[in-house]
Length: 182
Image (cartoon, rainbow, N blue to C red; front, side):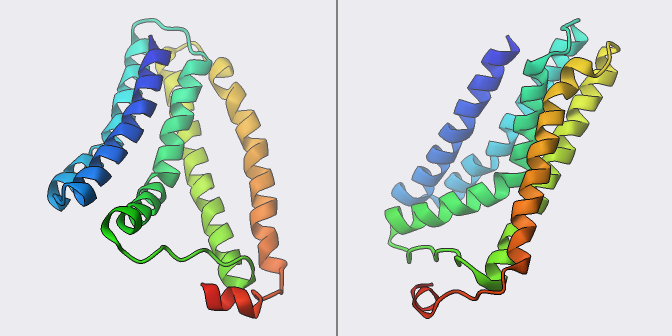
């Protein structure tokens, strides 16, 4: 049952996002579009509530609970940025706004963006792992099944840190041509 809720929530995220942007730019109803976009985080609340209910009804902690926690963590860490990115491109394609600026391919600005992305990843990790731990406590059955994916995620987070912070040591500035196109 929880897997179906997770799938429905992921579909719901993209449906609400598309509906909000279409309402905002195609129908030219910006306030109604913002209401739909404001509903996007509620999808995560539904997923969290479904996970808690499943555990309270005696569901054994498993990968599906960890998956829900990971999705919620990623939404918290990257959701706002994803909405802003989608809004800029929708404004460009649907309302004639200027094309969004491409991020720099090098230099201090690129390094700053990469570090900021890693900190968003860290936030996602902390939230997701915290939910996994909370579900483990709530279940009274331990954390073993829930924290398995967290170990893999930890490795991914460390690799992301190495890559993201490596840009801080890249002294190369973007080429002149890249500066002009940005």
